[in-house]
Image 1 (cartoon, one colour):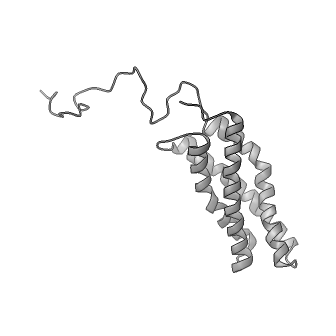
Image 2 (cartoon, one colour):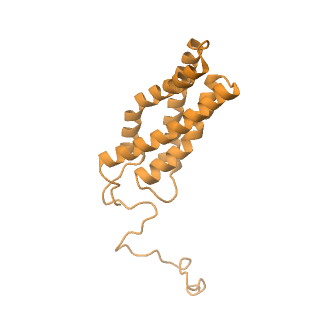
Image 3 (cartoon, helix red, strand yellow):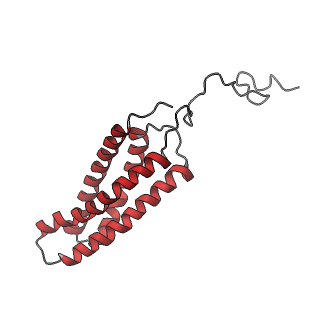
Length: 171
């Protein structure tokens, strides 16, 4: 496996992914809560969910260089658990801020609601990066990727694996 850059490069890329998904979430949150009138907590749930899949795929591919099929139990499920934990914490924060700013102007609320969301995810970001880097997408030197061919390893063989003529080895 080629290591996907230094830890600083991975942190920088992961931060860029987070900025992108945070901007997406902020636009959805403000549009739903202030433009459409959806309660702020519900709008935050939709907004955060809009960013989970893009975050997973961008982190997996661009930050950690993973290709091929995702491992559901090792990568997908833990990523969603992290995302849902952030979702719950940010929804509580956004709901509290929304109720405390209910009589503020729309312009001010369009700033403080996304800031509440950002504050929670900002606080969780370092812990999330460490878990992604050291557990979910951990890169082990000299370990082949799931879709990588290992040199000097014999190709699988047997009567049912001969691609040129499946009946060649049948008695």
